[in-house]
Amino acid sequence: MSHENRTSIPAADLESHLANDADATQAPARFNSPVNIHVHSTRKRLADADGISAKAAIDGLIHAKILRDDSPKFVQSVTFSQEQGAEEKTVITITEAMAEEHAARTAGVWNEG
Image (tube, rainbow, N blue to C red; front, side, top):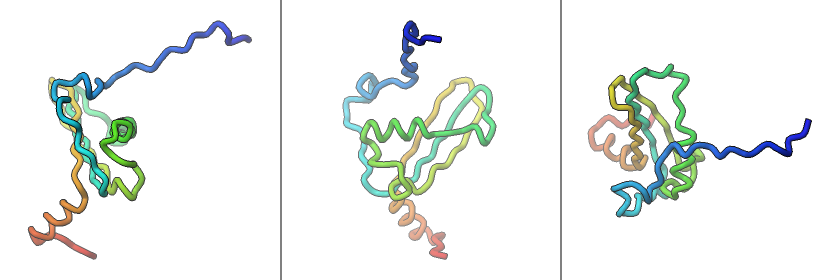
């Protein structure tokens, strides 16, 4: 069986490029220190808890040079939440890990365990 006549079909570009967005007039924030990432999805139909993944989105953040790397040295945690809603959207929040630790210490809830 020959595969000579097969054409390659490019993957769909599901996400818009930063340059095409209305808010793209400013350069995106760059994180060189450890971060925590939270992914919040609003969907018409909720996903199974084990069906939520942010791998492609995080790889896109690295490709866009927003994150330096997705190794444990640079991404300390990735958390997920979801809710049902008519407008489907995903919001990715990136916070510097040190800033969260400082805020927790200031609030008196830090446990160095």
